[in-house]
Image 1 (tube, rainbow, N blue to C red):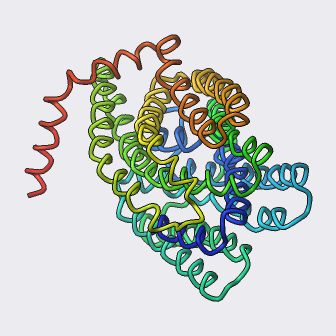
Image 2: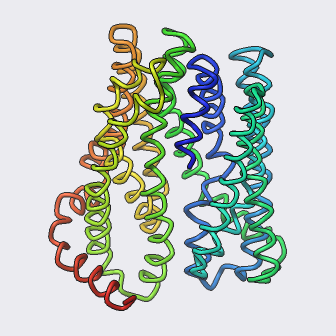
Amino acid sequence: MGLLVSIAIARHYGPAEFGQLSYVLLAASLFGALATLGLDEIGPRDMAAMHADHPSRADMLQTILRIRLFGGLTAYILLLGFIYLDAGTGSIWWIAIILGLYLPLQSADAYDYCFRVEKKFNYIACTRSISALISSALKMVAILLGWPIYAIAGAMTGEYAFSGAIFTFLNKSKLKISGKFNSLYAVQLIRRSWKIMLAGIVVAFQVRVEYYLIEKYLGWDSVGQYAAALKIFETLDVIPIIFTVVLMPELAIYIRSGVKQKFAESYQGSYLAGILIYLFMIPIMLVIIWIFPIAFGDKYIAAQELLPFLLIRPLLVMISVIRGVFVVLDHRYFYPIVSSMLGLIVTIVIASMLIPLYGLYGAIAANLLGLFSSTILCDLFFYRESSYALFTCWKQFGAVIGRLVLTSANRQ
């Protein structure tokens, strides 16, 4: 649904305005890690594990809610400052004022953590789907009535407002969890999460820095072309994200139960499952490449030529997000900073060298090489447990297939 609406927005507003909207959205993502404060990884794990030195789940929820709200407001202020210094107070500034409000509104995602641990995935799916449907309807109305691009920014922010309202309602009516802010736990959270937060900021710079260089070297039209090509593949990122959303609480409970010797096998099995999911995604990606020129039209011919080079990107994203789960479970909070810094350095160097020479092809090369460096290459040198699990994941083929068959049989 989001993909179809993005196509309509890109066609209606053209590469230049679509590029400005994408630039603000991506600039906001630079501060997204500050808004979440790394709690997307630690929060669900704590709620699932329930260690003796942690407060009740209700107190965890209220503590995380307030911390994330503070982080979101701080991120919003920094976003406005960044856009002002980079582009002044033109149209892109007003887009940032409206769109950036999603950063503090995102704090309601803390309810999502509880629903994951309680295995209420239907609540999450319904909330996200309803919010996306309302937001998409507002975007289509804005397009049909010819409203300015600011209306699209407002609809994007509205999606987070709707999901926050629904999450709050479901918590009060279904789970009925109410707690209080725990300052001691808040300090514990920040002490553990700041490394993940810093790594998230570096990762955001890594995967977005080429947008900044494209705008400086090639202009807004090229930003729109690049955003259209990358965005259609980034839509597939929801698949590994959903996979890890389910994986994290399950593994946290599994490891807490005292069978940590199975950690390596779980690592192998998770990588194998991720690779199998990627293989099933390949036909979808081929259909995307085939339908892209029909959907986006002649304005985006330059973007169409970039798509075949992006086929490998979802695999690198899948490896990255699975590795991220085990980094947290293995208490290697500093490692994401190391890997993301390596990816950032590679991305900046490659993008600075290749974009002036090869245009958008250079940007694609920088994006892919940065992801490769921050995952596979970095693990080979600094986190060999991950490399071993990835390259020996085939050993778990029988076990993974057996679990799938068993699960299917139980459901039937």
